[in-house]
Amino acid sequence: MGRFVKGSGAEALQDTSLHKWAPKLWRQKVDLAFRMSSSSTAAQYDMSFKILLIGDSGVGKSSLLLSFVSSSLEDLSPTIGVDFKIKQLTVGGKKLKLTIWDTAGQERFRTLTSSYYRGAQGIILVAAYDVTRRDTFISLSDIWAKEVERYSTNQDCVKMLVGNKVDKDSERFVSTEEGIALAKELGCLFFECSATTLENVHQCFEELALKIMEVPSLVEEGSTALKRNILMQKPDDQTTYADSCCS
Image (tube, rainbow, N blue to C red; front, side, top):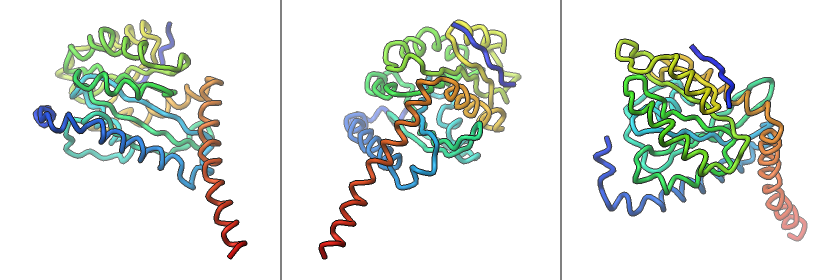
């Protein structure tokens, strides 16, 4: 059940050569995301927002994202550094493009992924207080909320606390009431969901988008980003026209 609360394979990662080259791979992903965000389809959207998923390794961040984008699941390896997906949807009568960044939860990557907090209009703390692992719930306040405060450059950023894996109710170690209380303490929206059954997955992302659109400064940022993408395409169009005139 979703609620709105308003208030104040890790083995693969132990390869040191992989860790060494990770920054280069991430830069390539950033370049790819930028090109996709600047595509010729930009005019089809009213606003474009950046969303960030953060939290402990293994709580289901990547699974939540994949479930939202494709409504399907597959065996996922731990995220190396960062990954991203783009989702198009209509919320509140507006056509939106969400660029959703999925970050690694391992401590060794934390300083390298800190830059991805910049410019995010929404942050989902999927430290997902994984309801079957109480330590991930404790990490929300001990680690991840502090990371947001330290690295986020947007004081109006909308935050959401998500409790994942509610399909494992018999293994629950964190109560809904505890989740609501922490969400109030951190000033977050609150949802419980399951990437496996898709329960509340779409609702939590859509609710986050709705709340972002209620903040004028974030709407302005989303609209400005869209206009910037459109304007960046104009020089190419003008160059093509000039060449054709001189041929």
